[in-house]
Length: 119
Image (cartoon, rainbow, N blue to C red; front, side):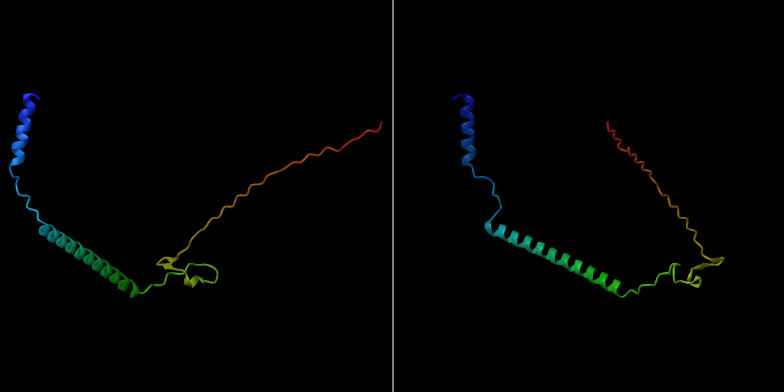
């Protein structure tokens, strides 16, 4: 062994013989802290569930009591012009333009008659 190895061995022996600092952890302390954390998480879960339930109940209550207003009918078959919405200048008119494009294709078939010669 070299001189450095002997010095290191002596240092580790000296350090190993000295008592270390107290860790401050006991089994009772760890169990107590675990129960406290579990109780806090359980309380947070119950609180969040109550908030969601209250928000859902409020939303349902507000939407269930609201009346739906009827819409304005659009002009069409069976609806008279008196039902058409009007402005101060007169009835509202709408112009609709419909363009229809058709494509045609021509197919040419050529047949050749069969000619036979008797000879």
